Length: 381
Image (cartoon, rainbow, N blue to C red; front, side):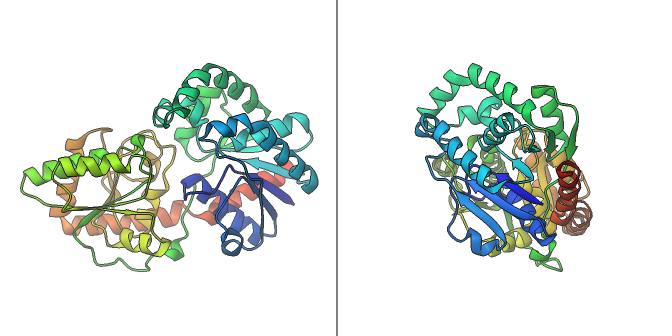
């Protein structure tokens, strides 16, 4: 069996890209021939993921005007490569690579097209993402939105079957596209990457995120400020990068937090796992997150999670057992839970142990790849 993944680009380590690479790696181990067609990626990807055939077609990235000027030409390159490969399955992921798959399916109805919907096309249906785009891309996205919604709703039904990353995303598919028959395949973790035993905890809180406005890291800074007003100085480590980084640094300066807040930028995988393991807790304030890898990675590292009671984390964080779910946008609730974890070390340790068991039993790449194999086998035959 030959499966062709379609993914826009691997220029930063987003959750959807990790799902693509980790599931592809395990499909190869199961004897599946896997190709990934993308616009670009880090040069060492073929070395890190041997056995996967990477094809990079080039071109401007989707968050630029020039991509949309040249998008038909990019699709034609993708089309020619798929024609040359003759795969058994095409497996598109996020927008706009999903459109490559839908268009190819429309012109090649005999080839099965399985769409992994990480979320309904965010540049089309998520106003938070549109508002977070830099000008002039934001203006272009707003202007074209009515047309893009019609195109999106026309193309999505080309898929033969839809996979989603959470029950929350399944419901969003039903709301946006009217699709009710979907299958949930949870992303996973490689538990062998993480410490076998709990690490000694240090006095800091951890946030791991792409630094965009809708990830709401600003709420954690506000919580830190309230704690400081109570005479409690909690250190915060923020891992990640993005267009909001400058604003967040400015916010920490205005709140007088620069001595207790560290922005690391992008870091190595080994260092990230070390940060996860040593943190008192991980705070994940994003609202309506489709799934969220950070909460399950934190739990794999024996670390409790404070997440918004919203979206995918409601399916991965067990409230009051592996962490806490708090009211979305509530700085006060974040403060309360941070204080509780800080003042109740034994309970926090028990939460970490439960978190590890929770992830080990429910979220693994092996389980995800097994589900994919079942779907691909069914449609390839």
